[in-house]
Image 1 (cartoon, each protein chain N blue to C red):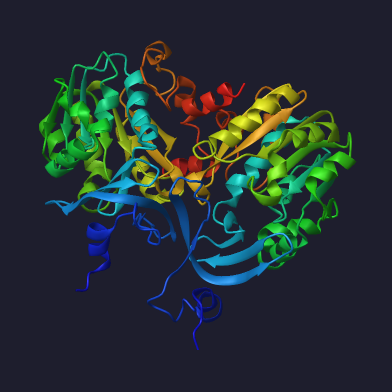
Image 2 (cartoon, rainbow over the protein chains, first blue to last red):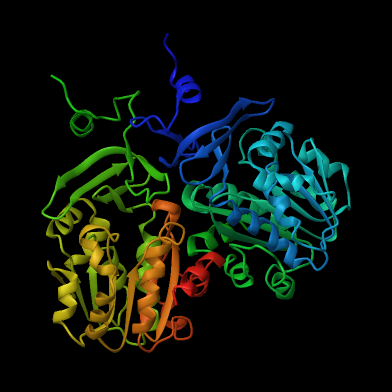
Amino acid sequence: MNKTQKEIALVDFDPEKNQILELWFNDSVEFGHGCRVSIRIKNVLCFYRSEYQEIAIFETEKLGRMLVLDGITMLTEFDEFAYHEMIVHVPLLVHPNPTRILVIGGGDGGTVRELLKHPEVEQIHVCELDREVVKACRKYLPSLAFSFDDPKVQVFYEDGAKFVEENPETYDIIIVDSTDPIGPGQILFQRKFYEDMKKSLKSDGIVVTQCESLYLHKHVIGGVASFAREIYPKLGYYCSLVPTYPSGLIGFFFCSNKYDPIDDLSEERASKLPGLKYYTPRLHRASFVLPKFGEEILQTSS
Amino acid sequence: MNKTQKEIALVDFDPEKNQILELWFNDSVEFGHGCRVSIRIKNVLCFYRSEYQEIAIFETEKLGRMLVLDGITMLTEFDEFAYHEMIVHVPLLVHPNPTRILVIGGGDGGTVRELLKHPEVEQIHVCELDREVVKACRKYLPSLAFSFDDPKVQVFYEDGAKFVEENPETYDIIIVDSTDPIGPGQILFQRKFYEDMKKSLKSDGIVVTQCESLYLHKHVIGGVASFAREIYPKLGYYCSLVPTYPSGLIGFFFCSNKYDPIDDLSEERASKLPGLKYYTPRLHRASFVLPKFGEEILQTSS
């Protein structure tokens, strides 16, 4: 009986017994750069297609478990802290009283886990398109998805772009913890969505959005900057170092109606956050300082 | 006639004609992390073994040319600026009058190219173990190796560790632009070498050394920090973002007898440097700010 390569990988592959085969996950994001990150896999924990995407969770050889959506690395347990701490603590420590938070995407639970470290937070709404992502993460990534059990958290399985339209003047902070601008995530990188988020914020609200790598997605970043600065009086872009992402780098837009990402940082509240591995107030400030070519991407888009 | 995979790659591979084969270079540095960077290759420009190592220069699909030594990526034309600007301009703009410079390693010429942007520099000694690296780079990487033609530059094909022993009180700045602590590069990560470099510096001299990734080489970095701080009154560690290196990150030790890497930076001289893509004085300062786990690596080694 012949089996395809995928069938062998999924059914017969046992790295404990097998000395000559190696199973590698190749991130499908080459973005036309002919450069990719590959990660050695020990076991396939789940691998199936939901209504929206192909969901895979792997046990890696050395980096803990990893979540892959449509062939793109979402996180590994090895370095997810660098992403989740920076997408959360930067806006939360700038806003003086962040009580109501909306997370768009974030179905793995890592962002919620970090949000729950802030005593000011009273209510977290998570708007995740795909129920199956939450289900898979609850089963295989409990170190992140345990956070969904907190009574402050409510999950809505809806379209994030619609959700913000339907909830005006509601949130202190909106965090867009999304996939890349391909397929269902595309709309989250467009002007209308940034305008609708502004309406869904309270008047002094803050939005932070995942927005790719300075080295690899200059046009995406420059494009978002060009309209976001027209919508939000305070705009910044900052980076975090995430080795298992393509180019080892991920960036975020900080969009605010009122607060300055540097001047309004509360060091006092920062000093009380438990269990940090990446974030410090010094690093908060340093993360907004970009390489020269990065400054130019942000400037020339104006 | 059967050919090995390597022979096919080197002799018959023509990506212009071939629609079904892809040639990828896999960086051999996994460092036990089961994670690697792969780069798509269009052509093999040179690939041979010198007395010291296997030297390869590839034409990549999208990242320009790349230099590989013993299976490890040294540089691509796409992002080498991030490495070379940071290994050079940080120490050169802290020292008030850097006239005599020693580069250990650096056979590709990128470090010398950046050094020559500083009008204060009168003499550059390059001590590169392997004559063949310089030869190959002169032929295939002229955008870096053209710098060897400058009359200020003199290349010595010698052992760097011995060279510093034999040249006491000579240099304002020593830059160690080395390979990883494997094989011939190993000695460059040891205490004696740091002591000998101190003797080879003038009394107010500065040493900067390539020292790996915070995510992947915690023990190497912590180990060097533990003895380097006993030798040099001013010690710092700073990072640069280089996507084609494993983890997308590379760090440097700044070791100085006198000058502080932040307080003694000359913004005025920085503003006159031509052709920068990465370095800015703001980024100079920000690059010394490490993630929390990085601070801990440096601190716990004390």
